[in-house]
Length: 81
Length: 191
Image (cartoon, one colour):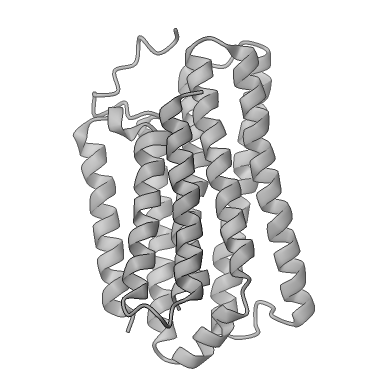
């Protein structure tokens, strides 16, 4: 069991709890969509780069994953009024 | 050590294999487009989508996220142990991986049961049509992933599994995490 993976899991669970808490207090935060999406993208990247070991891969694959996330989240924020 | 022969820096050999990554991107694009269409549809009746979203159980959603992420962690550990040629440990962690998937499916089953009992079925409104189709399609992926992991478990126990196969199975399983990490915030939290 890698220590780095244990830390990653800990961060992922903390981020999931934070996401749920932010969502339950959505009226308090002005930019709630932005915050929730940001936390989810962080979790996505942690899984891809650490658990799926994409950090070892050719830069092409890293760029394409990040590009996908940028395009998806930008469109989502634009269409979400 | 089993990983000496694979050069991951080569563009054609990402961990899990190029074909698996093409599949992952196609799946992510499909689910991504469906989620964007959901949000576009929600603009036509914000109140209906918001009230319907509130009918979903955020705790169930968050718990399921934890199940899948923990399962993903065990999957990464399985691959690590397999690379170290510890087949017994790899097999043990693969069992824990599958257990995470089973917990996910049980909780999803409870959630579906409660929704059906309350009358929130596929045709209840537009939001629930999206909810059932998106989560249902994801559940099918988890089921397929579990079957793949079962075959992999058999391969590891009989010492006939190759590193490429274990990595490809792991990539498919992690893909289920990734899809859920997109579905959960949009369906359960944002609208």
